[in-house]
Amino acid sequence: MMDFYQAQEQLLQEAPCHLNSEATPLLQAGQRFLAQDLYATQDAPLFDNSAMDGYALCGLNETTWQIIGVAAAGGTEILRLHPGQAARIFTGAGLPENTEAVVAQEDTETTDTKLHVTTHIKAGQHIRRRGEELRKGARILPSGSLLTPQAIGLAASQGHAQLPCFPLLKVTVFATGDELVGTQTQQNLQHNQIFDSNRPMLQAMLAQQGFIHIIDGGILPDDLAATRAALARAAATSDALVISGGASVGDRDFVKPALSELGDITHWKLAIKPGKPFGWGHIGHCQVMLLPGNPVASFVTMKLLGLPALRVWGGSHRIMAMPECHQAKADFTLQPNHQKRREFLRGLLRFGVDGPTVKPLPQQGSHMLSSCTEANVLIDVPAQTDIIPGQWLTIYPL
Ligand code: AMP
Ligand code: MG
Image 1 (spheres, rainbow, N blue to C red):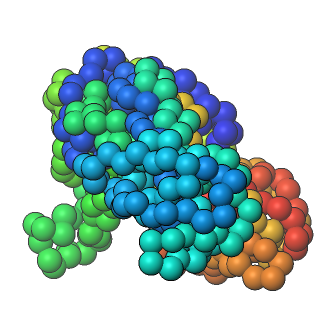
Image 2 (spheres, rainbow, N blue to C red):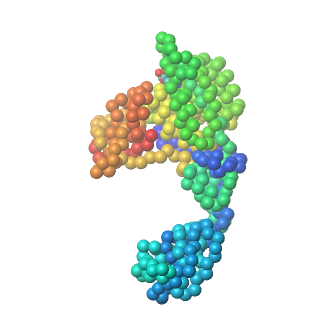
Image 3 (cartoon, rainbow, N blue to C red):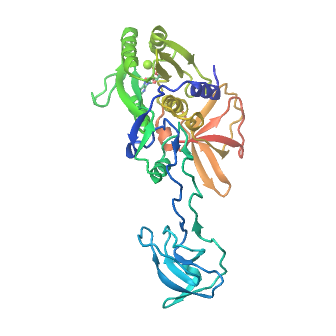
């Protein structure tokens, strides 16, 4: 059985599904991946301007200055100062010609049009210089960047109306199991039936990502021929398939055999709890991910392995595709813990005087989704390791 971090590394080595790019309007590019390096079209700032609300001064050895006008952000008037002259100026306004320094409003006193400065003035103070942040032609975002709100803002500041993005990743999501009933189709469950929770949950997880086009594959019966036909059909039109359930070792688990017949299984089975039956492979050019059927296992593996892999397949930079993680001190004991598998416990992170501490919730069954909604982190407990209070542990925010 493969360790979690080894599986993560292998998954992130898989090649992206697309190399071409499509021009995407700025407001539709959020949470997508940039398909080419993006460059500054102009210096930033574009002109010398004031960093403060205050006064622009000419002649720094004077004791008083004559206020001759106002320089406002967006103002069209061009002022010129001579020694002994000042202009009222606001943050972001272009400097009047011959400005030697800007003095903050709170460091001044005025009587009529006379200005007195109550602090020492340094030449060049409170001035933002043209090009001090970026020079025209500088790379502002590398290919593979996630277009976060701040990246969209930066692109907008450089006048980019469209961004070259990788095409949306077409992902078909299947649930499998004769016991499953879709919430839309039927409200009354018969003997031995349960509602399908994984398909809506996985689709909701994918919907949080801006780079995915979700296709609902429905619920597959526990039947080899039907599974094989559905996977073959979906693989022909999708970049990736996400399939929950049917990937264990039971007689009624048909996803693995169907995948072996249609394509290849790259790897199957991980030394993690929950999530042992996780696997991946491909059918032709279509990537395929097998998730465990138990809802918590499906959630945890999708969060920590599935989404990072989909990000890489969708064009993300590898390092940025990794799940967010932090460290917190254990506020619990696990002793002795001879677990053969790494565990991801659903836990509560708290911030106190001792810094961040973390504690597992009581219900850890891999069928108990309620603990996933109560928890705010997953706690990474390495295999065969005793945990003592105060020990630093890796945590993954939910
Ligand atoms: P399987 O991996 O198909 O053997 O399923 C393992 C467990 O997860 C069984 O108890 C299934 O009933 C349950 N399960 C599988 N798929 C789903 C689903 N989509 N929603 C809720 N429970 C599921
Ligand atoms: Mg099943």
